[in-house]
Length: 54
Image (cartoon, rainbow, N blue to C red):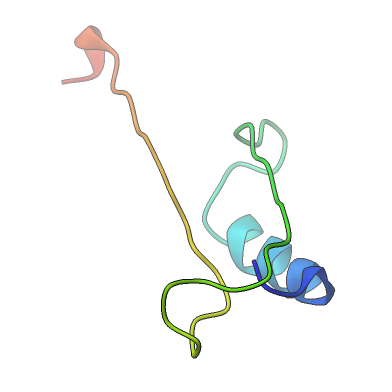
C-alpha cells in the first residue's frame, strides 16, 4: 500500500468478502512505490481447502 490513509477503505472492502467474526490473518505495510506508479495496493493471497470440504 502506498498510503496507509487508504486502510479504512481496504478494510471495508475486505469485510464484504470475509467472515468478520473470524477474519484471516493479514498484514499491511506502507511502501514508497509499487512497480507501476498508478497502482496503490498489492494483494497476495493464499487459500487452503480442507480435504473433507472438496
